[in-house]
Length: 169
Image (tube, helix red, strand yellow):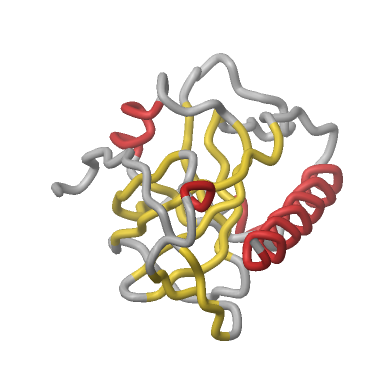
């Protein structure tokens, strides 16, 4: 698959946990399948997530453009494959917020970015596969960076809770 190509195929997986990484095995049942999955290269973003303490890997915008009609905007609980490692992520797909944290409808440009939990590697120019399993919430407007940070913390709690439940299923 060429960089920027879209791969949106169902995949059934089960998980074995080693610390905060996950390794994929044979499927347990059909309910383990992700809602959607994509594979793309990581590109440099605006570094806003890093500044507020939640760094993200931004995926190539060619991929984002092709997802526009297929994926409902919002935050998703995801598993992220990097090299031969699977990690837990919170993925956002939707319009970028402007400096005042309002949804930027003027640019009308969607982004796809993932915050990988318990991860501190530099992945620019590398390929990530994202497997979205649970829709967490739609895009929101925020009155301040403090409100945005508080919401991201809530999102991450929901992602971790989903993951614990997923492992028990």
